[in-house]
Length: 215
Image 1 (cartoon, rainbow, N blue to C red):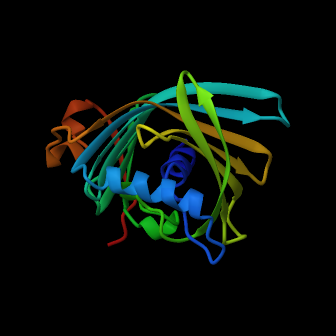
Image 2 (cartoon, helix red, strand yellow; image 1 turned 90 degrees about the horizontal axis):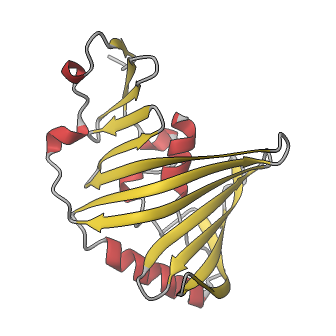
């Protein structure tokens, strides 16, 4: 689940540039970036769907993402991932256990704190089509990672052209799985104290703590 969340946090976001510039796609991504960069903090509710054609399985879960600067907290199913930009806590309510690690965004190839704004590198992109969804003009942009060693090979990004907001993204991995993340609600400049982005063991009595940080 942790890896899937990090895939979500990398993909909702990683809309990169390349030598083959699609100006129509680039304009949309630049407008999207300009809007999100205005916010000091963000709260988004999302629905996450995993579809596996090989096992004929499809399941959906709902979650919440909070961002402030380089800090983030993600809650989905029975998992809570909290990061203060230096340390990351992964808590499982099912096991009442938390793992503590040093946070290194390079290990995942992205920085979750840049979820709505990292359009500068790592992907080529192209405008695919525009269609109406729920009365809104939605543009589809297809992203392809320039690093062919990535575990996924394609991302379909859907953007509300008028609202300049992400509607959803679908990530296609090399194992035949499709991860779809639909943004159901979005709030900018929400009040989030810094201590919100640290794990409070006192709120979880008898929680087992596994500190895996390097000295």
